[in-house]
Amino acid sequence: MLESLHVKNLALIDEQEVTFSKGMNILTGETGAGKSIIIGSINLALGAKADKDYIRTGADYALVELVFSLDGHSCDKIREMDLPIEEDGTLILQRKIMAGRSICRANGETITAGQLKGLSGYLLDMYGQHEHQSLLKPAAYKKMLDDYVGEKIDENKARLKEKLADYRKCQEELESQNTDEAMRVREAKLLEFEVNEIEAAALNPEEDEQVEKKYRRMVNAKKMKETVYQVHGLTGYEEEGSAGLAVGYALKELKTIAAYDEESGPLIDQLTDIDDLLNDFNRSMAQYRDSLAFDEEEFAYLEERLNTLNHLKDKYGNSIAEILKAQEEKQKALEKLNHFESYMEQLKIQAKAQEEEILKLCRKISNLRKKAAAPLADQLREAMIDLNFLDVEFSIAITAQEEFTAEGFDKVEFLISTNPGEKPKPLWQIASGGELSRIMLAFKTVFADKDETDTLVFDEIDTGISGKTAWKVSEKLGKLSKNHQIICITHLPQIASMADAHFLIEKGVKNERTVTGIRELGEEEGLGELARLLGSGKLTAAVLENAREMKETAQKVKE
Image (cartoon, rainbow, N blue to C red; front, side, top):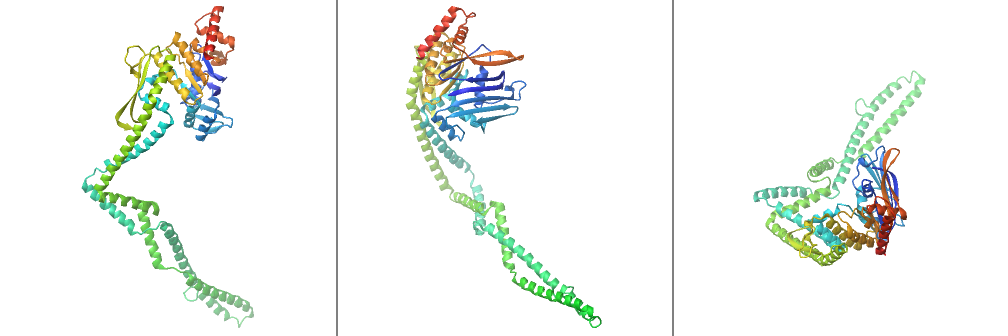
């Protein structure tokens, strides 16, 4: 159930918090007091479209917060949506509306507006004052009937949707093959060339990585060998200008002065050491040079192979796996063209089999609807009688259409007659707003007993009704509130008298600004509000007694 509503900086509301109770929560107030803002704020908290104009003038943001306490079934459903919920079933929904954006949170965790909307079906069912207009749209009848059937029909419709997708894909394939023979021959030749081109490459799944790795290594080996040859030549004793020849020549010249000056001896020794070291280094370089392996033929092969692989990648995919997949697909397409007549025949057989499966599912769905139509019609008829339809005939007509969709092949029509002797007519032809409002309430009460939504919100359910009919509607809501939490905005005293908790919505002035407020009324204040709704300008003893009598009558009905 909905425990509380907290609203801040929304339209004419400065800041208000309302704590709701079990049973019947009635909201009343003068016309223009802002009753629609309260229902609108609940809608906003559940993901309705937000607009910056909702923000109270002068404020930076608007805030709406709902606190729910949920049963185990609802908790499980919400956890399946991967949304947070407390162990005790508490769920706090918060929506902060700012200029250009809004932030939604569930128990403090940020969620999307889409997720917020998805929650609403498990939390409450809202009946707006114009919702009965949906009864004028025949397309809605099938959904209402299917909602009554429940999960079994949903499972079959999900299977039908899958089968229909396969069937349409098959039909598209059949239609796409309507090309002339010359074009098919050209396409076959191209496919054959491409398949042969890939086959000729004799690809291995991870070959591209291996070839590229080996090629990079050989490219570096070649460069290394070139460098080693160059260094060996520069430090050797064979090439003109090499370090070895230069040091040898310098040593030879230096030795010529040894006989004339003994001090040159150490220098000759140092240069001799350099000559020996350079000679040793040059021999080591020769050995290192000879150890470096580089196969020109293998390098040429790798280079050519890499070019081939890159060419195939450019045409057929970014990896060997993608190229091989493309080959497989092209091979299949080639086989189709080479055996075109046989392929088309198989495709037609496949489409026919799929169509038969679809029709079988459609018949199954139709049977589920037909099986549920009579008991639903009976329950709705009884609910309408409870709502002061003195003589009502109601039936659900299900007829098969030639075309099928993801919903099956049924056309669902609601037929009704509220006048004795009149032939039942389609519901959408009824013009009376009061009748439509009561019929929709009948639907709500029937479905409320079937589904597991704890909280039902009614925004001016009393449109177009008065007198005895208003009492009947009041009685229906009162009985409904025994097993559900009802939040109802009304202007009729008959409905307001059923209140377990009565809230007054009123407009006033605070700090020279208009504000809308809401507060719960005590017993005496509630009687005073009932008296106002009864149309009395003055709270006389007689009027208050009338209001008290109406309240007592309502409580007896509920008991």
